[in-house]
Length: 491
Ligand code: ABC
Ligand code: CA
Image 1: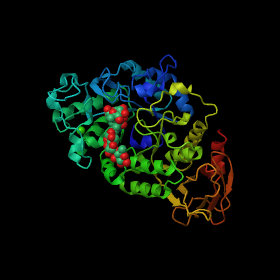
Image 2: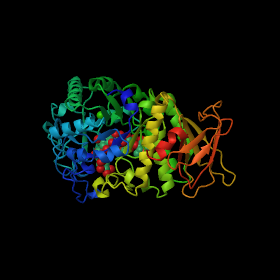
Image 3: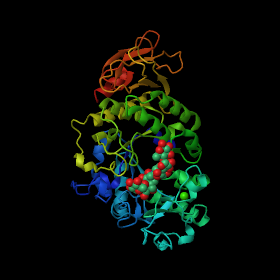
Image 4: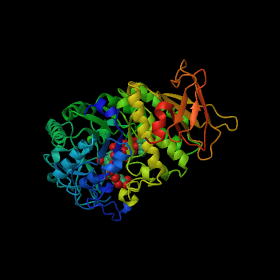
């Protein structure tokens, strides 16, 4: 599927080993052990209702190829990022047929499959971890490559400001090195381009999440992406758009890490800076080749969860809301809807079966379901929604405090009101100008709006402007009543 096909979608990120057991069982899974817990492709098939009922119409799964076996200095390869052979499927996750069944089960439901792929490195367990020389690896285990000469000479990345280091030195550590593929070598380039082409066609994959994009030279990527022939979104782990934006010229888009950092810090404390969100998001709009093709997220398997930083449920809801109301394609990481609280890797990789896939009394799950519904309603009621850039209004501080908590995001027909005032914030006032002004909400005087979460009504003033006072720090997403009522009532 193309970029345009993906723009209207909403993605649920699955960590294959941690999502569902094939037999529906619920074994213990201690994240700190960094070991396989047993999730599989067929486990995912059995739980697609859970994902689809929240309104997601695509999943992103862990890398699918064969990984190193056994325990490294940092555990087993349960996450799938430690390739040993690109031509086999990781048998811990199931067979090649099981993966095909997952793909067709998704397609039968009109859902898309996104697979995570790694080009930058392969992995092997060193035979000697105390002293890395002489050669501690059996390079012949790295398939289908031609031994040591197919890889960059060992050096661990030490200077992230030196792009050659970033591209040609190694990630990982001496006890668990990520052996860096020589992506300047034309034989390797051909192998990878052919591999991805076959992978996509064999498993009918609709899109790819490309790992470690910034660790491979830029001019490797356009041919790789065109060999894949589907939507490609790349991971460029960085906090600024200036570094990230050149990568948006090479493949469909990037995971929007710069905006993630701004939103995460704004909504994980009541002293976060909401105006920074507007600054970074506007830079992304200017600098990314196609901002609507980037991936928007507030959690993933590499970063501490929102609830590891704050237990304030109003902040948590505001943070999640962002993902669905800005320009990018929304991505929700498994477990956020269940209120998971894990900190940094590996604590953020909790097994989802431990939640029982419960959908009752799960306020965040309900919240996400309404957000997906609101986004779909916006897409079907405004043909230009997916190409209209969001505009931002950072609210002036209220009289009672010198802090600025409120930000309004207008992306007609959605008007989103966020605050980081936290639970109990009933003083933030959002004022959004009428249509004649830059960033107006797009409403007509006299219209009635409803909040898609609560069905609460708001009247548009005669000049088209909107003024609303926060209720306990909760976010609001306003739509005209005719459209929004169906969303808030869940019909
Ligand atoms: C394992 C353990 C960890 C342990 C680590 C040393 O080893 O589990 O507990 O801390 C996979 C596994 C991981 C595993 C790693 C290493 O392999 O999932 O569990 O960690 O063996 C991708 C994937 C990720 C995956 C890999 C490797 C790559 O999403 O899941 O990890 O295939 C770098 C890469 C990035 C990579 C990330 C893990 O490492 O660029 O592609 N993610 C700075 C750098 C970043 C760097 C980051 C972390 O540090 O700029 O390039 O990411 O090392 C911001 C700055 C950023 C800064 C961050 C930390 O702060 O703007 O620049 O990032 O403010
Ligand atoms: Ca590299």
